[in-house]
Length: 327
Length: 228
Image 1 (cartoon, rainbow over the protein chains, first blue to last red):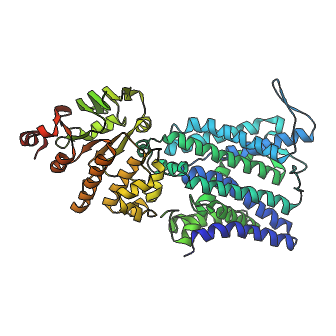
Image 2: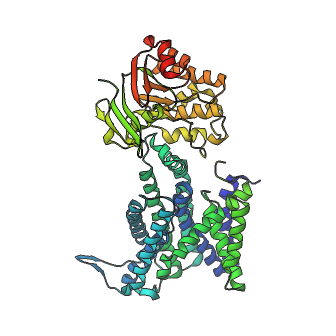
Image 3: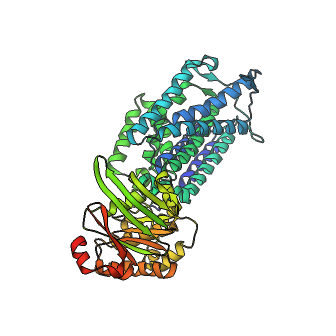
């Protein structure tokens, strides 16, 4: 059996090495695939904080991914058309600065997560799943009808946004940015999990009534986790929009929320690098099986079925022989 | 002013009434035994005090009305509960269980380790891998980590081997002697309760039928209301 600590370091290192090898062998498409893994991994790391530690099965996390994407799309659109964004008396200039876009994406997603969380966390179990799904779909249909930003057709951005000192149009440099953000999110997740907040959140997932007897408010713990989770997924949405230079309502789609959950289950729920393993397998299958047949999701489904039936802790559980992080 | 003042406490499970008027008053540093036959409302009283069950009547902790508070705020005010059946956070390690409950005060990982050296030895094990006795020690340790002013132990020695039971009782005596913490005890062992407790309250059919010093607790009361 492989120690989990080794996997935790080996997976990001492996992703980095593949991107560097692709750079040396002049394979920009492979670099784009590793960038996609880093971004989807980042989105799933966000969800893993809510789902893996807090036990919150959100089927509406695409809402935050889409908000992050549209934050990028709208700001970049106004920058490229030299037209300010007018919100009542407020006039906001567009921007092509990635740091500014990231801040807007994170704040927007966090505020949305706060609003959705306050209402959704009044419920639990299947009702929580349904309410988060409903919020996600509300935003999906809103984006479809938002003709100012492309409506159903989406919105194209001609140039990738800028980051000081980096040429983001060079694939390996853009990968580097996404990889650093993924690593920061992984460090944050590890710190959160080991902190008293993370332990209390974990306890609240196991027994909400019991944590109250030690003076902890389970709803507040879960709400904070949901907000942090939404903010990270929103950041991933902004990066994803930059990678494709395109935003569309599909970023809000419930399919994407489901895929993020699948990534986590494949890698291992609550495991630190589980979402990255899930994202890597997902992108690899999409690329290789997708080249053979448009029904490649059947292959993904078979893998998911195998993992659920035979390895309770996902790929990491299979490799370590442990069903959970502490088991 | 009493630390905990309960007067005319009534509670029910849905439509089914369970408490009809419980009175008890705990002073700071006092150890009180809450006694009665099975089903007389001892655990229900504890749940009502901790606001885990809706109730009516007077319920005050140092003059603060607990009825106005949710259960987590009651715990923050200083009531530490060791619930019946241990109920540790099974996926967390011993240390993680303790850290999750930690609040500022004299009780920390070191002092809990001194009280229960077995927990120190098992610090990296998950709660689910501990024996029943060790889980009970962890449940007590977790309640102490909240640094309460009143510790409530609901059947803390139930279902444990005699030698482990003795360890738990020794720990309770040590808490009483070294910290002067107020303790409310529910247990089936009248002999042990009599040696640790200063006062006792007896419940019968959901109400207080006797309250007084442990010195006044007679075999007649025991056979009439407690069934021994």
